[in-house]
Length: 489
Image (cartoon, rainbow, N blue to C red; front, side, top):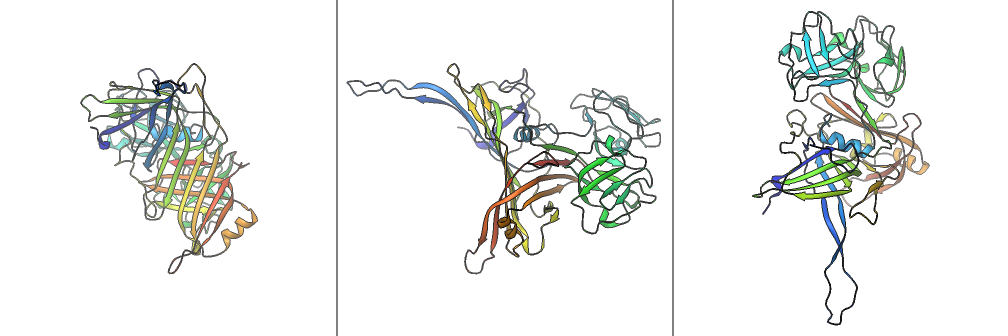
């Protein structure tokens, strides 16, 4: 017999759809349940027999699909949920520059020199002047810090002689550095009426993306505007050398010269829906069997992705897959798969405790129309393509990226109902945060298509449950975007 608590789920991203990489590095994934299905399909012959008997059923194909259900936590870069999100969006994350030794000491980050503040790394996306880097996993405690790049480079970025770093000739296996924002020189970054300005810092070099969200202001008076309202979240809508234009500005936003301040602005990785099919090989292992059974499913592409934020509940979601092929065996694809994201570092998020803001048309939803539930759904309209020579699909077709939103609010006014009847185009974004990390979902253009006040009976609140459909947004060229900020203050 086999117990569900001893079932292990691992996976790996595929380079070629439907083909498991050679000697794959499998990763575990945190989840609630994984009722995935890989099974044969049979057909019974309709030939007649005079003795009223039937012949053996004939195997005609294989079925390969199913969901993975999970509780939401910050999607760690390169974790398996990172791949699932890419598959659901049919696109890759646009990540800020980073380097990670990823289990092998001195492999990517190869040295720290205290006298110059130089961190030597293998080549990759360049770290540039003004970038704020979060350093973690180093042996010297003082090297696990947040520092500003003073000399940019793809291989020898420097934090300066006075950065307070310690010499490390062999950075450990866990050593990592990641761009999490930028910092201006004293008095350089200013708050404008519609965004941020600078004189010396070139905003176009930093990796800011239209449609991405930023958190303005760091911890401590030296790193934030004197005007408290300016130290908050906003969305980037244009980037020029000396100006970042913002919307979704916080209430009370105004101009501020930033005099004598080294203003910090935090931003992160961004993904939006695209056109590239991204598949994974998933493997379930039933470890409590005397000889464990392993079921591998290849070419698994996310057909539907769901996220639900409901009051007084853990934020949860699901990925529903359609796949191409599979196999069952008593030998796993990777004898020692990588661990899943650590719960201590990436805790589960919940409504109420971790929802920072839900906004419609750039304004926080509040007052008489408080939100009870917000759910988002991506449907990729995947279809399997079969031929007469193979039991399973030979490829997967991809249809339109449909994005829908369900919004349930108290019916405190006719604000949303008016927009429903008028067919008004709106936008919605939702921000969740925990442990100095944040995720922002954004649907930049959508239209309410269904909904009505629900008078359920005596002693009950009347609710307005709305359904909305996304459409092409000319500013972001997207139906849906997702931001993740690995660190903010």
